[in-house]
Amino acid sequence: MNLTKNYIPDNFKKIHLIAACGTGMGALACMLKDTGFDITGSDKKVYPPISTFLAARGINIADGFKAENLSYCPDLVIVGNAVSKDNPEVVRMMEMGLNFCSMPQAVKNIFAKGKKTILVTGTHGKTTTASIIAWILHEAGRYETKWDTSFIIGGILQNFDSNYRVGQGEYIVIEGDEYDTAFFDKGAKFLHYNPFRTILTSVEFDHADIFEDLDHVKRTFKTFLNGISSKSSLFAFDNDVNIDALLIKEKFWLEKYGKKKSSTWQLADIKINPPWTEFSILKHGDKLCRFKTRLIGEHNLLNVSAAIAVANSLRIPFEIIGDAVASFKGIRRRQEIRGVKNNITVMDDFAHHPTAVRETIKAVKAYHPDGRIIAVFEPRTNSSMRKIFQDVYPLSFDFADIICIRKPPLLNKIPFNDQFSSEKLVKDIKNRNKDAYYFQNTEDIIDFLIKEAIPKDLLLIMSNGGFDNIHERILNLI
Image (cartoon, rainbow, N blue to C red; front, side, top):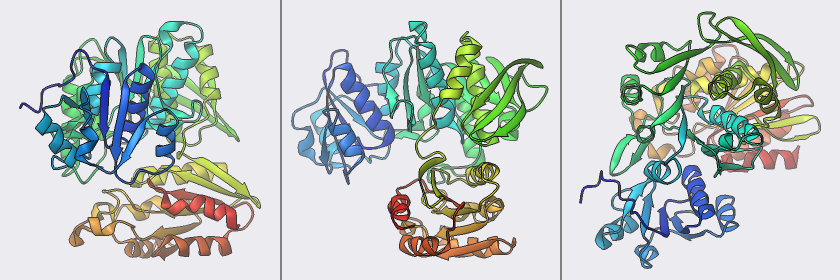
């Protein structure tokens, strides 16, 4: 059997998703259910909130991978990217000769088919940028149905309380991941899409479990750029040397965005007036409009700038764009305030890459000048648990007043010689004359914070995982 073939049949009703509890696969399951398909799924460690989220939508998720989960003979099986070929459901799927495909194949052939795809790519800012575009299009869709967008994004948009939507208009917004597709397709997910509009936010080394080095990452993005249609448009960040190196002899329409005067779209005249940030957008040097947003930090203003540029290319009026930017509430786990108690604020953020950690702390500091920033970091990703960024992370915490670093909770997954050292990170941060502490577990961090935190402090919790529910536990104790 040719495993690279698209195995989506013409007529199908019953669909099973292997590893259905991931952010993207869960969203896809819901989109399929909302569209009228009969959906089942399976995963290991099925627990709230994703289990209850899917159950509330009538989707049954089996706890654990078992061959009998396919006994009802679904018309199509969608295989998650973390699923191995020796998974018992994959083995049974192959024995039964069932039709199967990857998540990107399903999105492309079921939901993006016949629509114009707006694809957001890059190492950083994909979720936020895609979410802003989706919200702008949704608001524009109130005036014209053609803008009533579909989307599938890797974060929960607070405006929708969802990371997916099936719209009636011409467009679909997709967060384009450079991570690999499936065990039968090791190419990047974003290679499956034929974008009408593309945003490229940044290119850095990440995902050390699948990429060898920065050159490997750049080759993947180059392959993607080479495949973009000449009828497509690319909006690229103007201050990234890796992007510049990739954009040579491009055949598509290119517009740069950022802070450079030479760029098509220029971010300018930034004014911080909490809870708002006000800014201007210039096109070819001409001031178009004054905007305001509740998002904080220059990195987020650049994300908004890219979204505005794309929306303008779709001929959405600036009045609608401005209202949507101002009413955008943000994304869960991106500078999300989980609570305020005794004038101590607990904020949750997904930051884990050194660049994201630095920009997040810097942004938060500018909005809380009268209180301390206590940064709490849990290295948890396949990249952050490796020593590849060992000498870079110390530079990421300069804007914090107190730094708490946890020992990586899953360090045994990484070969010993490749393991990241939180103890060394704390030592290196202290050498930069910063107040830093090492902790072996979450309980010790909580004890420290309960004793240390004072009114006006902001506790910035950074992790791509649940971090042992540290946010709620702190709020219950302070």
